Length: 425
Image (cartoon, rainbow, N blue to C red; front, side, top):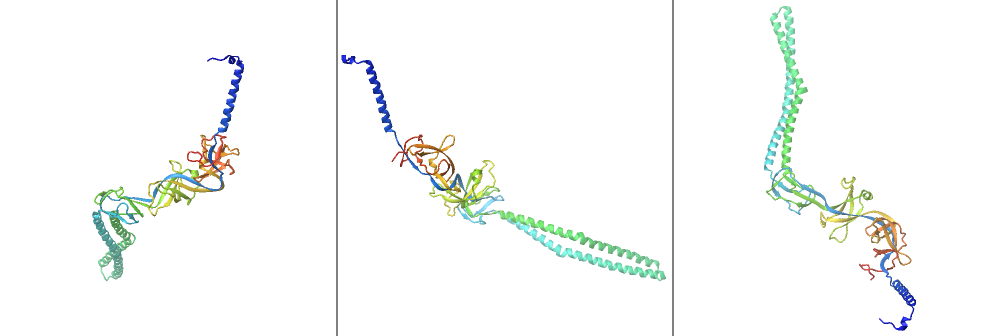
């Protein structure tokens, strides 16, 4: 490049100063441009509400039947007939199936005959034989007593005659011997009567009673075996399982028919002890069922009195009406139990709460200068949409409810409507 003479004559210092001034001017111009172009973030914000808030305890659960009966036979036998199918509605006591029982019926009939015979023997012994034996023994005692009295009179008479010399001594000795025999007969009959009174009669009655009870027990066992061949439903409900067909053998201990009572369903949840202690029987709940638009109403029907040993949680049952059979057992659901209520609470949307890595909670508010400002808060209960702020807000602040994530302290904000991406509409 060539320079003219005039250019060469300009001092170098002037050129350097000019360049420095130009650089400063450019920097100032850029700063002014940046200040002018500083972006303003559009957010949605509102004042905290002050009012009542009811705690919503949220947990996952699955629906289960109000009652279930997996009915197993007590005997092993082929199935003669089924009277229900899967899906059949049954009542408590209804006959569901019958097993082959002809051999059991025959045995029951045999035992019934033995019982009848034992009953007849008992009646005969207690009403005829024992009383007759007792009466005969009393008669024997009376006869022996009369004979003894007669012999005593004969001995007394012959003794007198013998002293007078009217009879020989042999006749007197004969009377003495007859008296001894009469005394022995009387003693024997009296002892027999006493034995019947104190021992034999009682033993005879006990023997007869024992034989009757044994026969009756065998008969009742046989009747029970016959009854076991008839399968009845213990509950109202719907048949959900029936794995066998007629002719197949049903085994003891293997469910033959399963019946579920789904007129009401239970949502069983496990909660921490601290949370469960705040609940009461009858507390209302809302259960969200997949495929059902509106939450289903329920209430707390059981709060376990003991902790689960595995999880150290408390099991809570929520009952919902299912009289229309609209809901199915086994469905996973989301439950929200309505717990205690706090009046005049400062509350903000849950979406406005920011959680730091250390677990601390905060919200972003719009201050008087129109910039975002972080405020640390302490939280109380929540109802699934709003949360109670116990410390940090008094209700006069403008809390950013949408667009607060990623905002730096002091960022200029404008309150307005934002789309799903957080941009101003």
